[in-house]
Image (cartoon, rainbow, N blue to C red; front, side, top):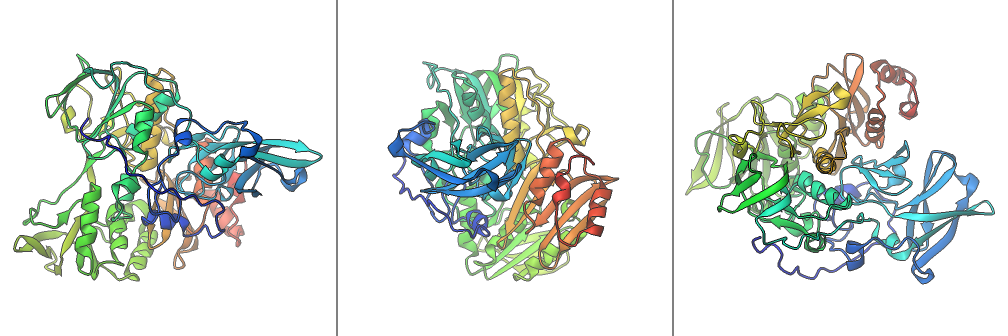
Amino acid sequence: MGGCFSKPKPVELKIEVVLPEKERGKEELSASGKGSPRSYQGNGTARHFHEEERLSAPHPYPSSQDCVEAAVCHVKDLENGQMREVELGLGKVLLVKDNGEFHALGHKCPHYGAPLVKGVLSRGRVRCPWHGACFNISTGDLEDFPGLDSLHKFQVKIEKEKVYVRASKQALQIQRRTKVMAKCISPSAGHSGSTNVLIVGAGAAGLVCAETLRQEGFSDRIVLCTLDRYLPYDRAKLSKSLDSQPEQLALRPREFFRAYGIEVLTEAQVVTVDVRNKKVVFKDGFKLEYSKLLLAPGSSPKTLSCKGKEVENVFTIRTPEDANRVVRLAWGRNAVVVGAGFLGMEVAAYLTEKAHSVSVVELEDTPFRKFLGERVGRTLLKMFENNRVKFYMQTEVLEFRAHEGKLQEVVLKSSKVLRADVCVVGIGAVPATGFLRQSGIGLDSRGFIPVNKMMQTNVPGVFAAGDAVTFPLSWRNNRKVNIPHWQMAHAQGRVAAQNMLAQEAEISTVPYLWTSMFGKSLRYAGYGEGFDDVIIQGDLEELKFVAFYTKGDEVIAVASMNYDPIVSKVAEVLASGRTIRKREVELFMLHSKTGDMSWLTGKGS
């Protein structure tokens, strides 16, 4: 086990009860490291769970002194399909009217605190306007990702045409609900050389798989193993917030794993998988037998093979230590970033306030061109240039030059020489599946693990999820794709767990991703590879736009900036199985000067 379960330091708990209305920029605050998905905005320390919150949800019918009850509106104040934030003594509640019925729920998305009233209500669920998580309005349960927690559901009653809501004070303050979970009842846990479920990789896919098993009542042994020194954390946040500490990034507190009997082996590397005998061997010789196996090893960053690649202060960002060292070395000095993809651009944006100079080196002629198209890519390039970032496009690194072993210059193939005290390489990643080569578990020519819609590999009882898999994307004609996004890893981990329990679940999530740079958030939903046209509404100059990516006469993806909740609307339409036609978008553009998007929620094409 390593020493991964030492007693945590006490953490001061601050809970903000009533939030001001200025939601814009809150998400940027949490994405820039001053908060985190596990802590409330404005509180820089990671928030550990209350004992009651961790082990059980507040009782749905608590005693009256623990409750607040009030009339919040008249029954006619809300139309069907409307949502409203209402005050309830200690805090706010999201009131929803759907099919003539009222529902009252927590008003903030537990993932990053987005105001759900600005989200999308459709098909009995509300979708977060920022990152696309979906919550069932009848139960408050999380139905689509990202994030781990659900919403509290409050009692509603109608008396004399007035709508009353009753809620526990604790639930109003906590704003998140961890689903009820089974605990491990396997007496030999921790000692024996066998486990019912072994999960290799403790990113979002691995953690969600373990949590889903417990939520579904599975009470046997679960072992989660990771190469990292830490319990599962939000690695996607590292490049957006380089000085985040491991405890700020933690997805669950240490006590959570103890409470639900999810064992975590840290710094544990699997070197061989023997599928015939259902056994894995670790680097230190430890052997572990399993009944069911989830492979979620993620990916490894690509490195440069140029001259001087062993020079000190050249990094790929993999761990909190890497990220923290980059910030320290860049402070007031010269930073070079190689690669203008998401990781590289997030790092460059973060360092601009800290470094003396930031330069980006990229092989393409426009950042994000293959992903977002030429016009949006150029707009983002301009945004970076306006923030003092210098670009060296259509070239690559020839050599790293050192002084006394430490990086001093980056020499480009264009013969330009850049002064550099630190360099971050973000040129993509490869699936971390080398340990499976002799296992009999199928890999494709690029090293990805192909799975079916149930996340099953070619070997019965062996599942795979996350960045290292290719899977059939149902709403793109089951095309086999690799989608290395945070949200997708959550969804795949859940489907794998359901199928370990023979529930015959299939992956059907619409991909959703986001990035944050210079306090601006870009959202994206769909799968746009192979788009042949981009239709842009809004103003690129003002960074307020929505871009529809089309292939033939079909919309296959959408991106937006300062145009919420359009991306969540499109994701919800695609998730419902409806096709959005190119001509619908074009017609709308012709007739609409207002930017109204209500046509999207229409029923037919």
